Image 1 (cartoon, rainbow, N blue to C red):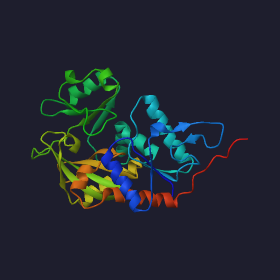
Image 2: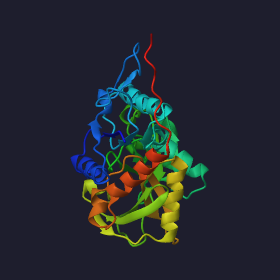
Image 3: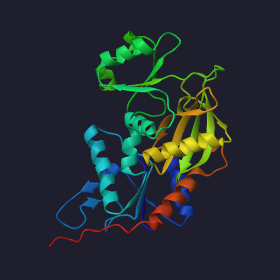
Image 4: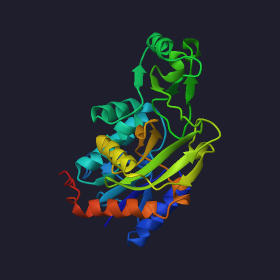
Length: 304
């Protein structure tokens, strides 16, 4: 089985996935999507490093190299081209596009009828300011999030219209979500890891401030995921179409949960500290199972 592991950064996760693949008898080829080329005129035009004589059977995606809008578009195009040739890609480029774009995630989750904090997305500052004036006040903020972003970077609590940054500072997209405080005053939320449509592990995240991401100093604690949280996380993953994901939840104050985010390239170093489930092995097992059941990649015959 010819497997590529696309990982540009995150040495801990890369090492865990590589070790898991090797434990299943697979020696993966590590490569970066930034190094994939398109060359027409002789055989398969998609040239993946380490696969000079064809295409891989599967690509397990850990990260996409950062870059310009054009570079990111090309790298997603490469993933789409792999899928169209019959290569198994986890997560699929369509799922990545839906989950990286928080507005698309919110739209899909809402259309699936799943509970989520009230969310508002505008292109104009005046529309966002009208929303803040109507819905926010001191002690009842609205969260402003970057449309593209992760690990708690760039989040702001907005209580007054004048606190909104200019359009240029948010790339002309205001993604706003109602802040859901806990009644006990704790800063706490939850992460559920879903693989192959099933919740396999979860953790509580607590912080000294309202941003609880482990990357930002949040503390992970073990969590016996209740059935209602597991079912919600599984439904959220299905609404986006991700093969493996970390779904972030908050309590709704009435015994239930709300979906905050669905992550297409989730980190799990914090979760691995507090669960006995081998996350990397679970992802690799599911991925290899999908590769085995897929049709082999289509190869382009060399042109005369």
